[in-house]
Image 1 (cartoon, rainbow, N blue to C red):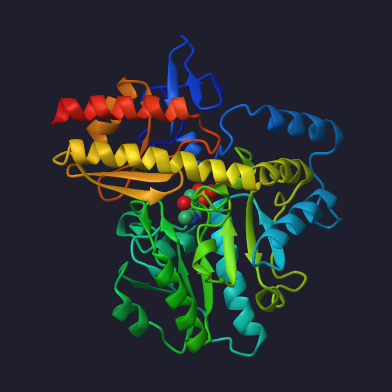
Image 2: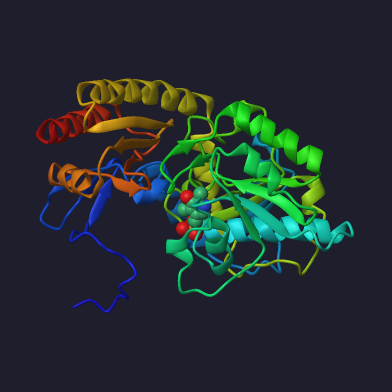
Length: 387
Ligand SMILES: *Cc1c(COP(=O)(O)O)cnc(C)c1O
């Protein structure tokens, strides 16, 4: 029996080792891992550079309090700010902590400029911003909030319904928070023109724009941030998942205006930004934000998408749509995806579900072409049997 609480519906399989794009069971069975801890292991399993970094730092210093200066954190914050819109960074340990801190920063900004009633955050219905009490209510999903009482302060609009979005902005709205690519929600990409309009709307209404890049950020989309090419500049961006390459790190990126509200004592985290985490974060960002690395993602992902689209044409009764950007990919089926995912797993390809019958595919960002080919072959075989 298991002494772990039953809050997960786990597959009956475990792994003892990982290397690059592959996972191995105790009996030596080898799986192509296109889950990668849900977009976390951006450099695959057991990346030699990350192993070296963590080994080196683990012998020097693991943890000190944020009561002291942490040079490794200063370094990572500087890189994040120099690469992006941000002027300041607060480090956390997870995505939900980052989105929750983003909400705090938005509210605190309006408080600090003498508008304490502007607290409400407008979000997409059935989005995903994490599992803390506040963030489940931000997500606005019945399934996630049922039985957990009530946390107020969130309003919702339906994805794509621009009329209701405008209507739901009130004098008490502090910010709009969206995922530029909805991950859990079914790999739904918000088009660039939409992000640009959203920025205009926020300017007009004098509210803040929070873009949750926890899943789609850190080069997953082929750009460091998925909103980058849209020319939409957000005020606050929570990140997590990929930035630690498997080590838990979260962070909130903010512009100067917002960060001014976060004065000493307004927020904190015991673990957030510790030297061990920061050393890994520095190593990850150096690799994933290099021009050559990003170019490679774009080229190979284009190749992968074209092959997936061919499969959609070959099996139009099985596959409804191929969605996503870079290596944040969804195969939308006509039917529930549970069996499809199981069949892929039987053929040694690991994928994970998302909403709207989507099979989510999250290769490591340094995946090799032959590994993508291998996945295509397996997906083809599974589709052929279902046809
Ligand atoms: C995963 C995710 C979160 C929550 O991250 P955790 O590390 O699980 O707390 C928040 N927002 C988005 C968009 C995510 O995909």
